[in-house]
Image 1: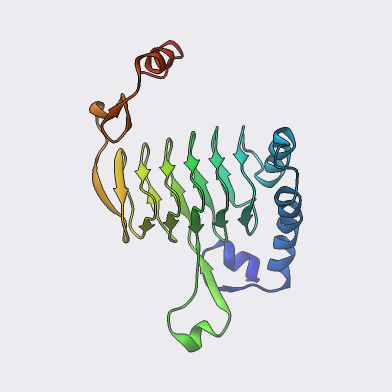
Image 2: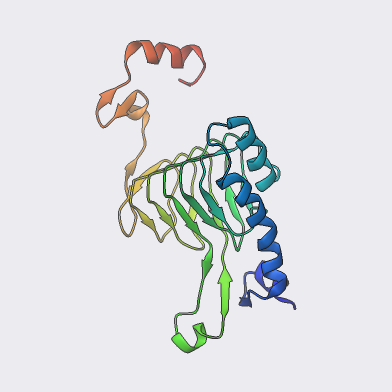
Length: 210
């Protein structure tokens, strides 16, 4: 097998010229995105659509960093805030309505633990899956092979080394489930503060209170 095939099978591979040629295509798009007028929202949307084929309404606040872009699969209404990094050696699958706070880092890549083996230049990528309606807090790190369920909030500064189940609030280093999200959280804004009546009525009228 060549190294592109090895990479895509999630086994040991080396970043040879064929691998780097694919990354060059991505870096040219990132060059446009990361140096364009930050107030050109329509232009940013166009470049993000080029970077993430098949995305629908995805928006990224530059700067943004990834290896391929084509290995990132996002659902509807994806949003990544400033300085997000997705090392997409393997596939990163992200569901609908997901939000990434500043400095989120998603890493599919890894290297052998033993030093001389690591020095051989072999590495690997293991896929990451993130469900629908997930909010990753600032400076969150997602490690290779992780699955995060639907309707999950991950607290700022977390390092996610194990899977997170649906409807969870999780935080910490290493990240752990703190509690389950329940109906009691529906009208909460910040900690125990409730959404004000005017805003809640607007939420109801627009069909987001279901």
